[in-house]
Length: 258
Image (cartoon, rainbow, N blue to C red; front, side, top):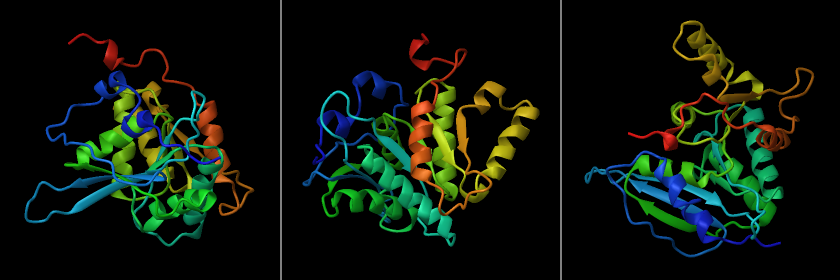
């Protein structure tokens, strides 16, 4: 079945969900251009001397109708790295989301693990070259728009500073009750083990409550399984489907009167 681009998917879930995210000082007009297979969100720096473009895009693989699977935002590196298992995991995740009819929201880079995950979607649906573009004015708006569109949650593959920043941002928003969506880290070859140790140490030091440590779900491959052959895509889908919503006691941003 051919994917169908729906307006509510392009611009977010609802006015209520968008209002839960922090307001930004540079909100731009949103413009979409051509195609039906891929959406790109592009942000330009405010420095008139450097007009550096920052882009974000996602493939539309969502079937039409009220039971269409929720979209998923995947954070990963814009660099290719040098570990084959990381690339294999990115392909596995992109392919699995496509076969499940999930919308993939990702950073839109034509290089690195971002491109690899996008290729998994593109190869499955033969959607290459079909592009939708949204122009925004800031990196902050770009990230907020990606978060709003990610109705089904956030998944992280190995990456660098940008990937870590995105993980911590959406986790903090979950802690504040701004959203109630899963944050899942695919611990390919133990890449996120130091981060897991950091969280445990922060809990022990009294900087993170134990209940908030559980806002991030780490997915590990079995010890007797090859990291490259492990089905990270299937593991992603299973983690999303079995994730439990934020537990009672978390701060509910939308219910608080300021």
